[in-house]
Image (cartoon, rainbow, N blue to C red; front, side, top):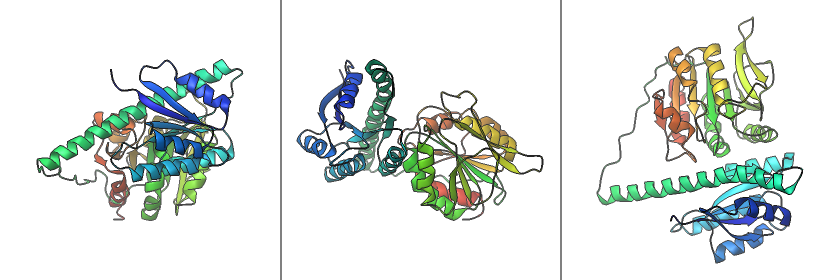
Length: 368
C-alpha cells in the first residue's frame, strides 16, 4: 500500500478546520496529521513534523495566508534534501481574498479553493470534498513525477549521458505576419503568467488574449496584478470592446470570451454565458476556435500548465489555418495536463520551457 499523503490544515475558524478534516476523512491515500488556528502555529507544527501538503486559509490573524506561504517556502529552501511542502490556499470570495490568493499563486502556492457558502454543514463539506480531493491527488501525482524526473536526471549524470539536443523554433508563419497571441492556462497559471507576461509584453505590441480557469472576482484581481507588471494594459475582457495593440484581455471568471470581426473588419471581444466546454467556463477551446475564425493563421497559440485537456480540440482549426502552436514542457509545468494533451494530439509545433516561450514568440513575430 502506498504511503498516505500527510495534510496539515491551517485556518483560524474551527468550523472550517473541522469541515476540511471531515471532507478528507475516510480516504485511503490521505491522512490529516494536524490542524492549526493560525500561520504561526502552523509553522511550529511543520518544524516538528513536516507534512506533504498544507491547506492554508488566506485571511487569518497573527500570520495571514501569504505570510504563512512565504514561511513554508523558506522552510522548503532551507531543507533541499526533503520534498517540498505544497500549499493549497483556501479563500473567501471577496476582493481582498482574491487579491491575496492571486499573490499566493504567483508566489508558488499549488492551487486554491474557495470557501463554500452552502445552506448547511453537510453541503459545505461535500463541496470541499469535491474541490480538495482532485487538487490533492493532482499534487501527489505531480510530486511523484518530479521525484521520478529527479531520479532519472541523477541516473543520466551518473552515466555521463549528454543532455537531449535543444529544439529550434521553425516558423510555420512568415515573421511579422502574426496579429495576436492567444494563451490557455489553468492550474499554476498565475505564476506562469507572472513569469512570462512582462517579457512578452516588452517583446511584442500585439494584442494578447488569455483564458485562465478561475471563478469571478479572481480574474479581475489577476488582471490587476499582471497590469502592474506589464507594459501592456491588462484588463478583464469586456463585451464588444475593440481590440487594440498593446492590450491584454483576460476572460472574466465564469464566462466565455471570444474574438470576432465586426462589419468594419475590426476585431472585438465578445463575452457570453454559453454552457461550459470541457467542464470549463471560460474555456480555452471557445477562445481558440474564435481566434481561428477571426485571425486565420496569423496567431501564436500557447498552451501553458493546467489540468485537463481544454484547448486541445481547437488546435485542429488553428493548425489548418496556419497558426503556430507552442506548449509548455512538462518539467516547468505545475500540471502537464493541458499542454501534455495538446502535445499528444500532434498539433503542437514546439514544446518549450516556460522561460523560453517569450523569446520564441519574439522570433515568430520578427522581434527577436
